[in-house]
Image (cartoon, rainbow, N blue to C red; front, top):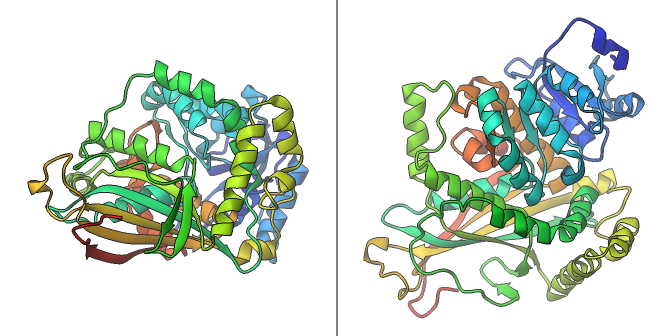
Length: 461
């Protein structure tokens, strides 16, 4: 292994450096990376781990390698409060995977170092404010330096992005969707225990909600996609979605925001983003893919099989919404997460058994028009429904590392030629036209068409 003093040795460029590898999610990312390190058909040939504490990194490597002997992977010292250490780190990486959150507190120095050095960057952030501020501050320089910066490469927000695209592409012209609602169901044979980083980000997000709105007002207005039909109605606070057998309430997550960013970029670039070195064949494939993606109004709801479960979700949301507005309230929320989340989040995280027993289902219920050529905007109800589904293992510690590593392997592979030279983007517009969906299906995350039916003339619910 290589400690801090090893950084003075001859320069070695690593395919991937995992920053924050000893954290709750980071060690699972290491475990997922080890599956592909050095295998014959994998582009991942060299890997290093980085963080503040070499001994904790070594322990994480040992945990991730169990029951095998840990491989001889270099351990590098870097700290998000020490920009020179980050610049040294990024100068040694083709790709940095950042697992250090909350990103609003610790993420920007890492992005800055990657952009300055010209290496690529992926993270597992689910914080809209961080993502939008990074785009505003670093997009132009990243594009110039050839640094591809993509946040939300985990459960936030790839299942939502690819899931919407999958549903959208089922609508064969002249059919077109008007709205797609995603219903997220978290399931477990034991108890559902969430990622503590997600909880912390939600608490801090409430504190800065006003600043985010002010920031958005200061930014140029993004292009809005043209969506056939009238805007969807606001709807009830609590919904009983009988088609998939759940009760649901709106989830204020990053997913819908990230999807809107992708759809805005697609509106500005109808054929998608040009790759740095695409062949004519790849250009044709990219253009064909994006021409089959139809925009729709999109929202996400958290669901439960029981109405009591919905009341529990709403109670936690009220706690975070009310207490998160004051400093003392945030202190209480972060000091006692298990109390205020009614047991869903705890500082020590879930047990291995709880992780293994958990899974998710995300239903995408699309309403639209069987023939939008005869649509008179504003006075016609949707007459067609397509339901699709994305399913996979536990979201924070299993699905997120799977997605992050598959995105990373695409960036490391020859497909990098088909991606933008650089810039700050959401994951959908970067990876939508690649083989990411196929890769996820091969690694335990499924995409299925559930039903497509004509709706009764008197109802579109």
